[in-house]
Length: 294
Image (cartoon, rainbow, N blue to C red; front, side, top):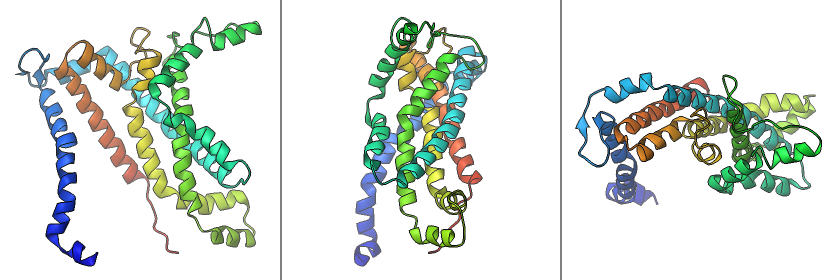
């Protein structure tokens, strides 16, 4: 193995396929996207350079501003709820013996299911004439218009979709934190309990510091996933009513694949890329991860 690692030609042979795939699948499309964002392009004619026109249009696009607000809401909601609930579930399931695998599988199951199918399922459940409202009607309760109410700064459909996303993806955080917590030596906890520490203190001074590396990973995944959020929104509301539940990814889709404004949709994609990179940078700079020696 040492001979292979010291051989530059061998390293190039192993690394080159990855570099080629990365370039063709990711780097080249990103460069093309940035180029198209400075053009008028409808796929029927050749792109024509228009400078910053698409970016100026973004500043005046009320639906885009709504989509940006909704994407930021998803980001903040996901960053808070999925992290807190994911850690609590991981700690709880790590400390129980009976039924651990059963509860873990039940919580994680929505993560492996199709988001498109789940979106249609929950759209049916929140239909005002059936599903949850039909159940509430049995008790004489009139249910709200779960996916149609447009009152408030953050409208009810956005809260509904956010909680459905929480239900679907919190299991991923739980599994990652369980893997990190399981790797913590039990000797640290036993020493803490001998010194008189409570379970809460052990969690605060041992568990939390040692899961910080995983916190950076899960928080980055949550935030990037929230900004790129598409499936549930499209299948539950398709951006309605009146474009009030549009997010950046859905509005990008509508502009590109329904209105054939590929230049403008590319500009939205550039904005989305910049936001993802900025959030990742802020997370890595804002959370200091200490290195502990055993």
